[in-house]
Image 1 (tube, rainbow, N blue to C red):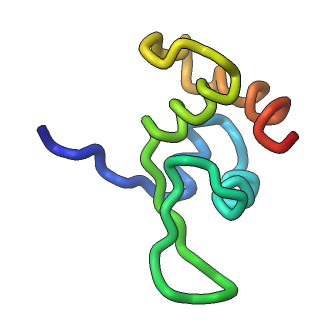
Image 2 (image 1 turned 180 degrees about the vertical axis):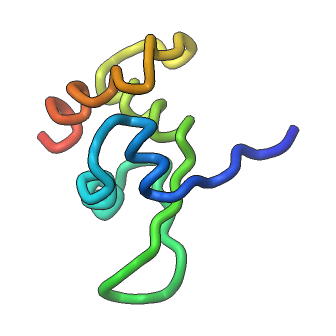
Image 3 (image 1 turned 135 degrees about the vertical axis):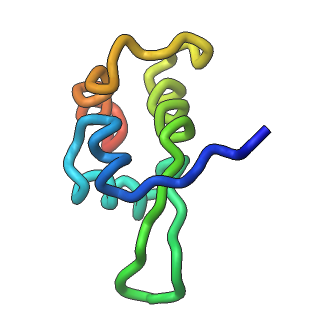
Length: 85
């Protein structure tokens, strides 16, 4: 089985339906599925695994992880309500 490839912050933000800037803020706060690349102290490049982002959102909202979301855009309102509380 081939591991899921990493995607850029722009692609991951589109997947969950939020801005790239908001997603990188979540990454700095430790959301699962975000991985820093490089050694810079002030500025990091982030890569993401979409399935891990989706699972983190599902866990935070108490949803069944085995059931896929109805659409990629379904996460937008859930993220705003729960991930930054």
